[in-house]
Image (cartoon, rainbow, N blue to C red):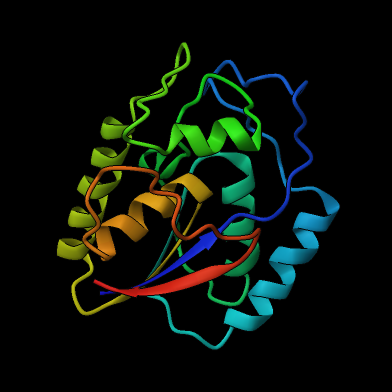
Length: 177
């Protein structure tokens, strides 16, 4: 399976952005900059054949996938399994780094355990490999999800800080799994 992984476009969340009570996470749409980023990426990917487009249910990822899909016309699959790690709210870059350090085991209140988060993503990847063997798919998700995918694809041990391959907004990587 060839997997194109895209991190969503820019959103305008701040430390004061309220959590969406339905999902327990920040669930903001793309900003004007994020829409521009997604349109630029859509142009870049328009000639790639995808057998499926899958996105996180969080607005910023779903909206990015919709913009990319305008050139593909596929039924877009929205799946909560591809949502970001639940941190119980907005966190700073420093805290975000600590949240991806297996050795520190930093777990603020209402935060999804790191091991459980990685297991959620690993299980989803295994299911995709079965369902889409010899296919090309696009997943639009989040930076933390990419850290788990990167660790999976590179068979990294789940120890230390696993923020090895951060992606910028609307940046993508290709994986052969």
